[in-house]
Length: 77
Image (cartoon, rainbow, N blue to C red; front, side):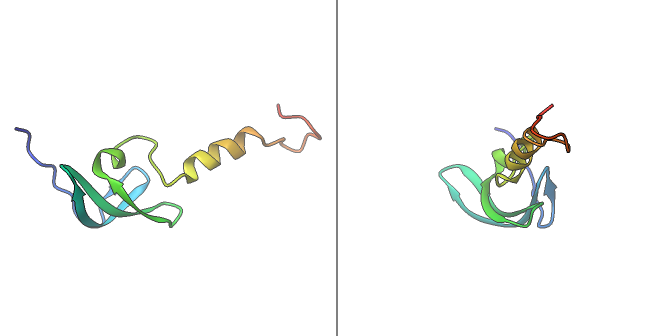
């Protein structure tokens, strides 16, 4: 059996800052976390450790950067 990883309040995982642990779902640990953009969300521990995990702000940022025209009228590239 693997050792349970210790998570402290205020600890940062990628884009998430841990605020408190909440009631687990079956055997999966869940935490109330704050994203770097300020949004608060309940997140599974396994998802917190993923590289690009966020509340959705990371995806929105990538998409908005894809469609920037950089001042060139009507050109995307």
